[in-house]
Length: 435
Image (tube, rainbow, N blue to C red):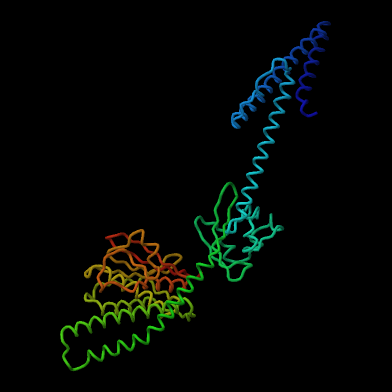
């Protein structure tokens, strides 16, 4: 009835006007009613014609989209306007049913394909509610049918996961153990799509983790096994060098090269064992005077360098730092040694210790060869070497920056590297200031 409200009000108003005219003139009542009837009929005919054209236009569009060349959309002069409208409605309803069936097929196909994915996929709606998930998500994330519509933070209670979901940082990746499957590690990413909709993907990286652990165990075992034969070899070389007899030039040169290579192997095994300890051992932490520690490291580095005035130490902060003295000494020493080794002999190396509102910061700045953008993301990986031509004397073990990174991770700190080829590098260690 509400659809006729406007028309009834219009007719009522017209009839009242007719009675008003008749009361003043005493005539024209029948003529007024006839005029109202004709106007209302013309109005209805106009609206019905507009409706028919609209339906015909929709049917034409549907037929064009479906490449349907039938003649159902052509007006039949024998049909009344109501028959044409009924025919158009019939064809429109038929086209809608076809579209619905097609959409249902697409949705079913999509559901089957996502259900077969090896990765867990979860669709999150507004306020992080679970809208949909595939079969893998049931296995590795522990989701159940009854969890649809529930907050995912009420299902997975890991603090790291909760923080990750609340921030939703673009490109961020979280690695956590599976909440339900022991021994499975998951790499989780989240992507926004649509309005207040997110796609969470959890990838099983257990295989990669196992390979990495096997590689580390192998390297650690080799490092331990090499210590004894290296010690014996170095002992015999030192004995031969200390003998009073004068060695032939060829033998003397050979002994010198053997000693250099054995020393290099010793440094390599020492660094590997240090890395193994950093990854597995416990760290005893005490309050450390970093300004005094840096002064000691700079003095030690200056003694080993020909130009003893290369290092410029700037200490703007005396605030102590809670940490492990041996580990921090190793990390800072590696940074300063690298800066001296990979920059021109007469160029300055600046070591600056200061703080801002949130961090205690160590900057090691050199004017060396620099690091390319392609190398920066990988420079802290084990044995990674930048694509720069170096002599045997300046070539290191490839573990120094990896040691630095692991030490900083153990101290909840961050390594930031800014560099430009040919202009030098800045290595910054950022330690959070406890509130």
